[in-house]
Amino acid sequence: MQNHKHLHRLCVVVILLFAVSAEIPAQGDAFLQSEGTAEAWFSINWGSTRDYFNVDGQTRLFDSVKTTFTAFTLGLSADYKIIKNLEANVELPIGYYTLTSESRFPDRSIFAPAWFGVGLTYGMPFGRFRTAVSSMVRIPPGFHNGIYDDPNHPTFLSDGYLQFLNILHFGYAGDEFWLKGSIGYNVRTEEPVDEIVYYGQAGISRVEGAGIFVGFGGVLATEDASQPLRPFYAGADGTESEKLRQDGGTGRFTTIDREDYIALQPGGFVQLNQHLTLSAQYQVKLFGVNTFRLNSFSVAAGWKFSSEMREKRVEG
Image (cartoon, rainbow, N blue to C red; front, side, top):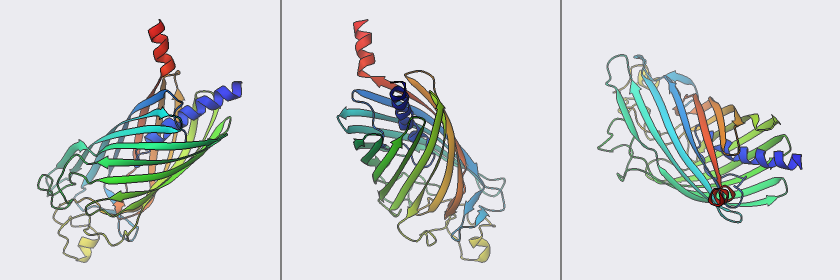
């Protein structure tokens, strides 16, 4: 009975851990909520870098004036078990992104929701094994068609683009450890090419209500990431110095339309009570092509709701 209780709590915590992936926000899971329950969480992610992986997979500075890219993201997400084996998922990441340079270029920034995501996850349990499939539509906050000619953000980022993400999840929960993973296909509109997303995680919980884990995740562009539509700085003249990004180009930092990367994601959690769980995670990008060399730190707080809790409050 004790092992069963520990397994149940472990499964609940595993559901939360997917939420703190720095690059792939919460989107379904192999471990669905119990029927009549919901879980909402709030996450904070921060990262800053002066480097990027170029089209050859080599680390380079953005330019010679120490231009720094900083990403600060607030994540709001929730899962709710609608009926047996079917769960609703919503997510709203809100980002504040800045570019600062020591000289030459003005500071640039944007503060806006990255998207609003609405989706469903259908899961099938097989004892301690779990499988699930999920689909989510990610709706951008703006309606301009095109990421490179947005009149509101002509030199940095854009108003986003519509995405349709489909993922296959799988997982296993033992008495003191768990394994989980996912692989999916993300359909992206406008200039960005479609991408394959993947994630894997292994964790151990020797003390009830606490544990550590290590994960890895990343994306693969469906077209050659070493042949982007535009370089990091728009208006490159094709010279060798431009290719190495040492002279800063025109300072027009543009949205990435394709990228490859893999990142290591260690972390840990503590479940304070039957409602509240806290988790922290650090991400290190190990390799990439045409992408930011952005390491980041995330913290998340999850709150569990259930129909039983509501019924007790009403009876009280």
